[in-house]
Image (cartoon, rainbow, N blue to C red):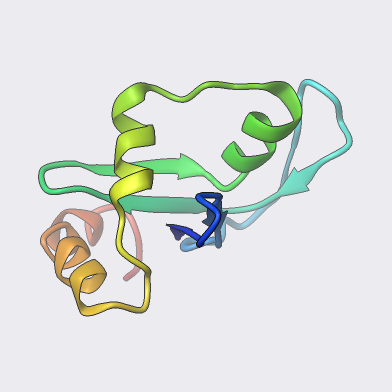
Length: 98
């Protein structure tokens, strides 16, 4: 999950943990497992947990729509976040054991 702290930094926690790990192909110094979900009004963005590493270490710039969704997301423990995410649960059940 992602939320933005008081300083405007995106905080990422894994939502779905995968069965194996992925090692960064650019530096080989970072390993993670899982995906994060960023719900918006109309789209559920799914990204590898390593997106935080790619942004910080390798200056990856995600698409503007993804960045806007990250900046607009409510905190994961809020009713607003749960409400946004609930709309996507039926679709996710096709791909994940939710």
